[in-house]
Each structure stands twice: as structure tokens, then as C-alpha cells.
Image 1 (cartoon, one colour):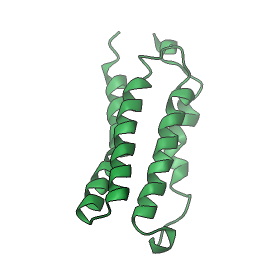
Image 2 (cartoon, helix red, strand yellow; image 1 turned 90 degrees about the vertical axis):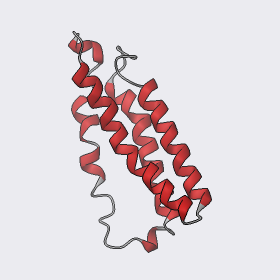
Image 3 (spheres, one colour; image 1 turned 180 degrees about the vertical axis):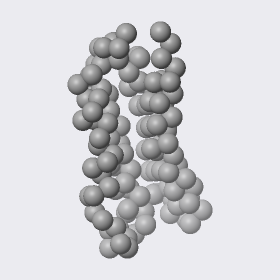
Image 4 (tube, helix red, strand yellow; image 1 turned 135 degrees about the vertical axis):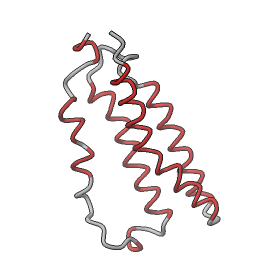
Length: 120
């Protein structure tokens, strides 16, 4: 079985989840916020590498939650870097702190105990 759709879902889903970091890194660099811009690019490149290295078809026996956890950690780090790049938490307006993270964590709870080889 090819499972191309699942592979595209993993790769493009995570890529879409981190693409905003790359876009904001370019904005930071244009604004002259070089440290935040470079940190955001490093985070984006690290995420790309982890998306590839931790892909389930390369780690067939590992549970999905183990594969997703490092990406979620990088995701949270990216949010912190971006917040500080914009001047800190006090400069954000009308943000419901923490409420946005719950929908983001759904896949880790739904797929967490499964492995790639469960569906082979």
C-alpha cells in the first residue's frame, strides 16, 4: 500500500503549521530585528528537518505521540520567539492566552497511541 495521502498529510500539515514562522522571520529581518529573524529561520529549518526525520514511515514502530512531541515543542518555542520578537507579551492585543493550544493538541490525543505499522 502506497499511503501517499497520509504522507502528504504529515508533511504538508506540519509544513503549513510552521510556514508562518518563516514568513514572520522575513518580516523581522526587513524590520531590522535580526536576532528574532535569524532565530525564527533556525526554528523553521529545524522544524523542516524534524518533519523529515520524524516522519512515521521512517519510524514505523514508534508511537505517533513520540514523533509529534518534538515538533510540538519546536512549535511552542517558535511562538515564544515570535512573541518576544514583537516586543513581548505586553504588546499583544486581544489574545486569548492558551485557548488556541487546545485544538492544536487534538492530533496527539487522537493518534498518539498508534504507530505507522498499525495500518500496514
